[in-house]
Length: 413
Image (cartoon, rainbow, N blue to C red; front, side, top):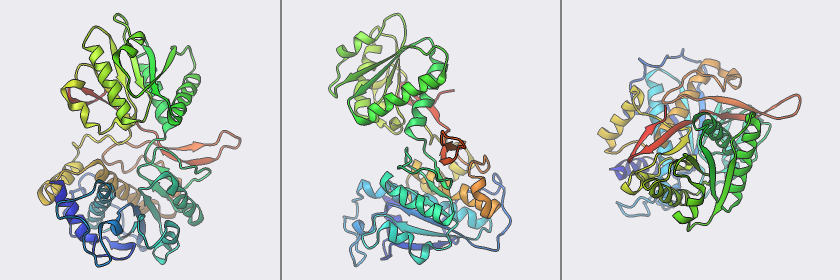
């Protein structure tokens, strides 16, 4: 059960009353065997020091006497993502330890009541860092990005689909793709795969939806050639099938792009479109990356049309490392590791390896294709438009396309 590993993680860190705590590479947790699949690195004289910032909510979970505030079987959802990220980092630390790596991981709770993020970054534990890994909000990102520039060390964010207003920062790496990149990538995918289909973008009214429209229109201009006509249709939350029928056809297939990040809006309109597909209308449905993890698409009422979307975090879980992590969770914690566990493992493993190989020169190799683990990353610099062009930040541009087909999630080849 998932609650078992949450209880285990909370028990491990709940006794700590400070907002940060160091972890040397001496974990006793079982980890996947990776020596056969990933090259080891020579030992370094200097200990690699990494700071991990995550929303652990320890002060919300425990009182001043380190007593858990909730019942033995109560685990609020807001506690889970940060703990999963932390758990994945621990597993990676254990794997690196088995290769003889000398790494110190210092963990900070970004939701600690006693210290702000700025105070945490100014603390003695954050001196002489080699790398910062963050799972944070957009408003928090600038604190970490500025610290990276000041210290000239990489700052890697594992969750945000935007730059948080950061610019001209060659030390910042976003492992998620930004909304602009997502829209450009999806538009190109549609042009290549569904060139003969009419394109209709269904949206609700909102600021984000307006930005999505502008990104799509920009992508159409940049693509060149003769772009297919794009119809933008604004709908209410209470959309009905009768409102959609005028934009569909019974002879020619229509590509219906749900251009909204609102998951509930996406589910509602998809349900209506699937119902129409079961009648006589020919259509395909494309969603946004926020569809990743929508479990409702397994239900029978969503079967009848392919529901496509893309994500930078697809992991088929067929490699030996993923299987090893799944085995550990199943046998030791009676749970299945989430995507956030794999992100934590991947971030610590990949960037520790790059540090071990390139040391102070790592900032020149942030886009390296080395040490891909569960998935391929395509980390590229985002450049300013002026001359000479300067690096705004680095961003993972790799997106994987998946589709829900008859209740099963499948990769799009």
